[in-house]
Amino acid sequence: MTDRMRLSRSQEAFRRARAVVPGGVNSPVRAFGGVDVDPIFIARAHGSRIVDLDGNEYIDYVGSWGPLILGHAHHAVVRAVQEAAARGTSFGAPTMAETELAERIVAAFPSIEKVRLVSSGTEAVMTAVRLARAFTGRDLIVKMIGCYHGHSDSLLVAAGSGLAEGGVPSGPGVPADLAAMTLAVPYNNAEAVAAALDKYPGRVAAVLVEPIAANMGLVPPDPDYLKSLRRLCDQQGALLVFDEVITGFRVARGGAQELFDIRADLTCLGKIIGGGLPAAAVGGRTEIMDRLAPLGGVYQAGTLSGNPLATAAANATLDLLTDEAYRELDAKGRFLQEGLEKAAARAGVPVQVYRAGSLLGCFFTDRPVRNFDDVQATNIGRFKRFFAALLERGVYIAPSAFEALFVSLAHTQKDLESTVQVLYNVFDILAD
Ligand code: KE4
Image 1 (cartoon, rainbow, N blue to C red):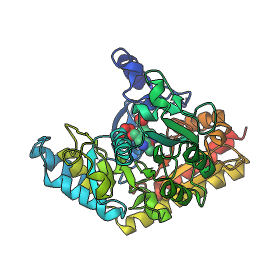
Image 2: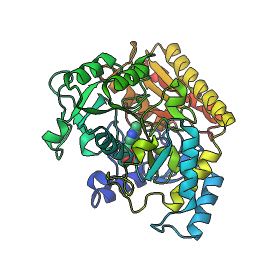
Image 3: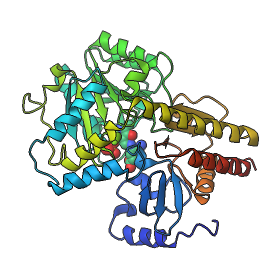
Image 4: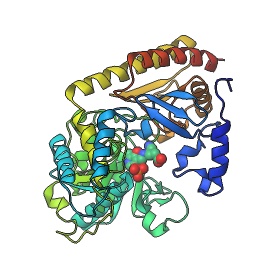
């Protein structure tokens, strides 16, 4: 630990938190269990910078796990939230800002005609699954191993014994009978999805996928993978559900669907559409979405759905995501990718770096990474050293080899050049 990095206040805060909060955190990954470093507690953040309780400042590539595409405390977002708060923080009644956010989402996603706002990605995907089951009259769900869709019971499922077998609970508290209705198959394997659909003809309600997988590190889809899923769903009468909680408004304004020119039947959004506040959404064709209460019988509700502060932050954020903004985000992402690759090559450390716009992933391996088995074969120990060395040098990336890096519009060329300089230094250390 370099002398610049004192962690005593974060360590004391972590001790105090553990007395009253399970694991001392309100979301598991924040406990830094995936790395050999105590978690840092945050005091404040602005733009591309985040500062911990001990005053250590970092260039932030976590960005609250994706929402902060504009950077922290953007003046337009702060002002919008302050003005909304002064008008009242929650009404439990409809407001124009919710309609305006839904209109922005519909304008960005050709596959979406109607939107239901919720408060988390978990809620969005849980609702999409219930909608798919109701619309098709079927119960089974196909999901990809290594993709994460929030913590609803049907999706906390590990692969069953054989390929295309019913899943098993990925942890305690999930009923085995419910888990068995989720078929978990490898990502980037359309044949495995076909086998599952063939094995259970007329019984699969939805094929659920992160179109660019970003919860096992960043694993891009093979060239024809998504089109194959679209074709298989059309043939079998299952709905294609894209979980774009990370990729929506991130990799393009219209998410992965715009990038790959494909239409999902249902789309789940979150993170960026909350601008850093709790907002998420599920959207799709009217014939599906109108199954939701109060029109249809599919019940879904939420006290803070469409919350005025969250919709204010969301609308302010989306209005700044112009074509020029995406060109800039792509250029920043490319600069960081090239810096990572050059630093690793110079040190002779094998890496695979994947990128979609301002979303990046870096695996420590000399082989391509296409699915979760490949990820598990990468050098996780080297990642842990990578994380610790970066943190010591003022660069904060996700504290897990199974996450991604996020570049924001607030990252300046100077931030990126400083980061690359640190990368050259760190990769030299990793080479030892
Ligand atoms: P939330 O319920 O955390 O808002 O969203 C769940 C979710 C759904 N779908 C995708 C593709 C997601 O990535 C997520 C949540 N992402 C994680 C990290 N990759 C959030 C961080 C955390 O769990 O604390």
